[in-house]
Amino acid sequence: MHQNHYDIIIVGQGISGTVLSSTLMEQHQKVLVIDDGNKKAASKIASGVINPVTGRRIVKTWQIDDVMPAAVRIYKALENKLYTKIIQQCNIVNFHASEQMQKAFEDRIAEDPTYLSTSPLQDTIAAAFEASFGYTVIDPCWLVHLENVLTAWRQYLIEKNALLEDVFDFKKLNITTDQIVYDNYTAQQIIFCEGAKGQENPYFKQLPFAPNKGEALLVKINDLDNRYIYKKAVSIVPWKDSIFWVGSNYEWDNYNDDPSPSFKEKTMAALNEWLKVPYKVVDHIAAIRPANTERRPFVGMHPFYKNIGIFNGMGTKGCSLAPFFAEQFTSHILQQTAIDIEASIDRFNILATK
Image 1 (cartoon, rainbow, N blue to C red):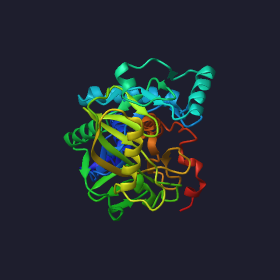
Image 2: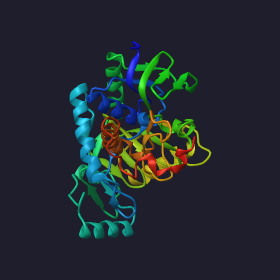
Image 3: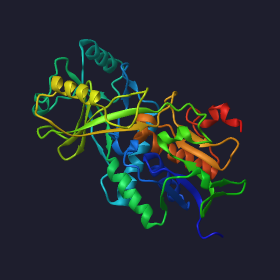
Image 4: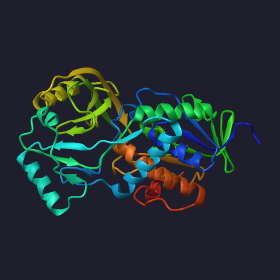
């Protein structure tokens, strides 16, 4: 057998590629991850929040009752494996922007209080914000320390000789019915976890990708409790020590991955109106998210090229969705079990054509 033979090649080591490669390796698969170390990849600048409640209608996030427990379990297992802090409970204090939103939360709690409470805030937190219309606490929420998990897992892959640090080149890829050949490496299957680059993948570019630009400010706030996430017009999320991630936005047209002055101006205006303690902007970051028109993941093997798969399209919810669907996809690959119909790429007939 070729000395560089693997069971599965994974392209991309964002949060999707990280949890999928980890889950496959837990099932004794020999995995090679190919990743170029792009510092502006979406996973590297995302907030890492797992929020069980979403939208103006204050509904449960899709699949959250299954997704969140799986994410917590898998990230905690990675913590033990990698000896680094990866996940912590970090509830959201949702400040109401209007009397209408205050009433909407009150009605939602009266109907179904799951994940919601009106627990009193510490005086220091209450004093840090303008809160004319009150607040609701979303509990539990979780915060994934993406820099820690991505860095630690990359080092683990290096130690296991399971990482090829390079830009993936489709010209080096040869697909046969029996195996995958990439440069000097062979494998039984290849799975693409490319994030926003997926829209350029010749095997999956027909999928309804709708990538969008997200931005955030990194802000130093000395007088704010970093055990909570704070949300109103923007979200203030603990990042590191007294640095907080503040964002984010969605830009769908004419975007690039450069920070925009208009976002910084708008975000600072929101902070000035809401935050009552001093802050200082220390950085401004931006990236292109791997979203899609359906807001549901792309998971599965190509209907024609049976040894080529995709694990992508997680959008803004990669931290919560990726672990659950990584386990589901791993089971599908190894035991031919079903993938959730709303996440499976089998729902797209267009891929069945060559």
